[in-house]
Image (tube, rainbow, N blue to C red):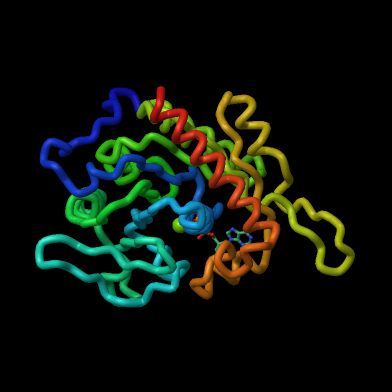
Length: 272
Ligand SMILES: Nc1ncnc2c1ncn2[C@@H]1O[C@H](COP(=O)(O)OP(=O)(O)OP(=O)(O)O)[C@@H](O)[C@H]1O
Ligand SMILES: [Mg+2]
């Protein structure tokens, strides 16, 4: 990362539609498969539930899962000049997946992936939004750097699972966010234990508490823990996220508390 330029909203002089969105949030992790998209989608809906106007950009070019998890199957719309987001249950969504045949593999080299992301960023007309959430691919590679620099987010949410091997990568993601001078960084611990359906006892499959300890160590905000929960997984597979499917359940309540904390963090950053 040495020599990496600081975060700047490159291209903002061109007055892109995205520059009118006051708050930009990136969701990332050092490690793949820890639940970034699940967390991004559910936090987005939890914020929609708090009357926040939210857009969700799927920036995972080679593994775009947001349309599946939000139940969007239609091709993208355009006004002839801009790409227009899909809207589902009050959330605006843009993903490259909607533009590709369902099983198509995106075999693009880094510069081409970065270019595609730049286009999604520059050419989407989001309309009036309060917050844009960007679901990033895992790691801190080329396109994560490109999009983070162009977006100049105010908040980075690092998703991790509790075990040391995931925390190790989460530390890199936190370091990346710091290097890019993102003003606020927070951790979500996902897959934090599960309740045995037979005896009701707690099973700490990947351990528990690692995300909280790491946030204390790093002096950053801890947003909360989500357990391993079959209904949460089903919500992702069926395109009806748990926050919509079971709004009164404990997992949804946790996402709602996180959304409140995020709003507070954003308010603090914006007034600093
Ligand atoms: N708390 C949870 N309980 C049960 N299943 C979960 C939970 N969080 C995520 N999952 C499931 O784990 C799988 C991976 O989650 P997800 O796709 O959100 O991870 P990701 O970090 O976005 O992955 P990638 O790095 O590939 O983008 C999905 O099938 C999802 O439904
Ligand atoms: Mg994902």
